[in-house]
Length: 140
Ligand code: SF4
Ligand SMILES: [Zn+2]
Image (cartoon, rainbow, N blue to C red; front, side, top):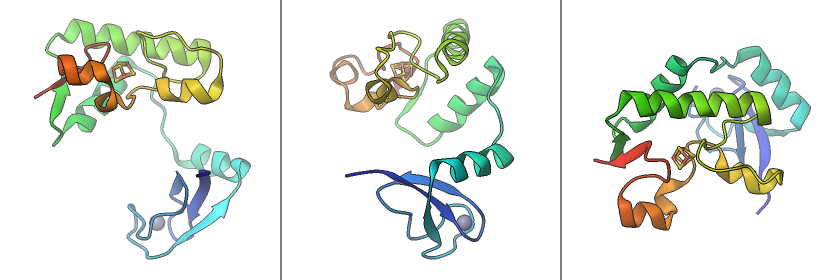
């Protein structure tokens, strides 16, 4: 299935998927998503999106992400900061927040799987160790 870009005509939310969500998660409008192209999406996101440039911002995002999940951030603040620093370096070097414990292959499509948070709960490592490959997210 091919994923495309969609924009909510009410609030300009951008969605990437096989179709737009029935209910806009931001403004709750119904059937509001219209297909758009890359350039439009980038322009809209550029106008509205924030930047995650510091370790503190990234750790806050992770904290929010783990709320009401069956996993949490690991205990060591030092490790968390090190992983966040690694990811921000990957942004500088490779343009995306790639996993700090794995090396991007250079194949863009394959490397999309390495953007943190990756789909770690689907991985064998999670099943065996109850944590993601880098130990950033651990089972509650
Ligand atoms: S293994 Fe952990 S740190 Fe690495 S990308 Fe996945 S979630 Fe992020
Ligand atoms: Zn909307």
